[in-house]
Length: 415
Image 1 (cartoon, rainbow, N blue to C red):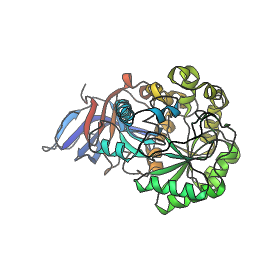
Image 2 (cartoon, rainbow, N blue to C red):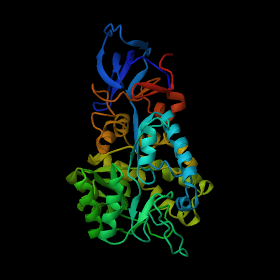
Image 3 (cartoon, helix red, strand yellow):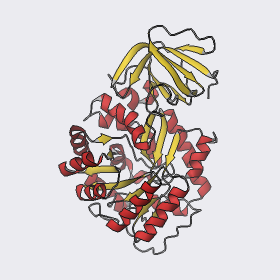
Image 4 (spheres, rainbow, N blue to C red):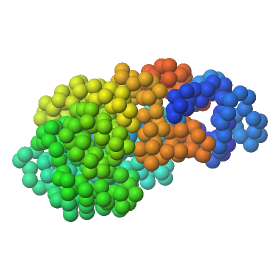
């Protein structure tokens, strides 16, 4: 971390405003006590109390947000967590978070695995990583996407002290109690499995999961706590069912149709596509621990992802940026920018990773924006990402510096 005075004036910058999809050259931004307190174009005001750094024409944009990560997923074999040490998993998570910050992600949302302890460790500076919005463990029915037991194993082994990304529940009472447990620890959201998935060994991707009574119980608890429910789902049948029952966000959605788009708009819900993970699972999943029964399911969702993205984009669905990468494949996090750029214009992709994602997470006005009063979470880019999205897709080339809470955490501001 590069120490600066409590006030920092950044000049000669191209300010990228994701909400309008425009950038303003020859601009300045004032940071004080970790917040943005002023901005403008042309010559910067004289500030004797602020350290001044000339960015020499580089783009200054809000820090990036990844709304679908699993920072504790040290392997693509998610069932392996039950046999691993909690201290090992925490060490892996610290390394994973640090690498994400280096790519320009100053906020991430974990949707299965991270807990309040990891979030507190980041907040207290024990882990050098992005701000962590956690949901605790995802909720799954027996035999659902969060049940990673092979067919021959019968016990769950769900001791709360041990690593794991999910809890297996059955019936509205168990689902309600599990939701309350996650919310009790300060969870920002509750995740529930609405359909089968790739990483789970015994379910079908085209199944629906969690009964209506179970889902209603979870939605009631989240709303009572002023939080929301996000749901893992692929098919239109599973997605539509979740949206009708009050699920506010859908993860993946590779197999949606036009009826799904209508429901997203009707309920003001978000979609978080995670296209890069299927490309990497297909290419190197086996090498990173994806079990054979899961490898066989990857193609089912891989080839429909771009079509679903196009359908949602053209239909006006609100979307946030997400990656869902597991184990060593997390190093490809920024490749999601390239994949989305095949369908969406650069400004829409950037908005999904900044202001739109911030709205989903409940951080509107706090993150994903250069508005006055927002947290000073920033990325300095050598070039204009609105004209060349690869600058974000290849952070080792495009990202000059990363600022979080007004302090330089990676790289350096000046040329």
